Image (tube, rainbow, N blue to C red):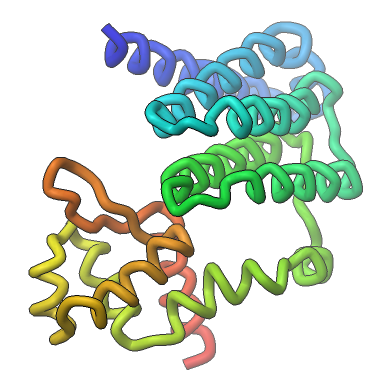
Length: 239
């Protein structure tokens, strides 16, 4: 039953987003198109997006004893972000404030078991930001602003640490094709026991990989995949 409801929710989101695209595409005057969207669909789209985010995070944190502390905070941050669909605009200053609020919520998730939730929370935040850009509500930061907004700790933890070692890069590349068991990664890297576990823990802590299924195989996360894509693009440009 839950799978059916989840499928219905995803379909409703796709439908509403398609409606938003039609509003914008069909009108050369985007201002008029967005005004029509705000009157007819913004409120229900916000509601559906928030329900979708809540369902995703609740499923991820099903057995987490601290979920009542974190999940409501994530929901409030998403609501603050999405309400700009009704107002029609969000300034760079407001976006920076929301990002800082989001980063503060992330700090509540300090356990190793929080990796899955943080990965999904990042994906949801990125998807909602993309939705605002598609709706013409948020233009995006300039490159200079994006550089200044970079978190030093995040750059080291999410980019430096995962890519600073040949073994970790090799693991990420291997998991990009399919999940693998510990023994498979041991054969791939030539490392055993604690030596391999050290690198796997580094990648897990940075949200690049996670363990899934009954066999607890290692799998790449969306963040890990994005990092590999970014690395490939960067090497192509500067290599």
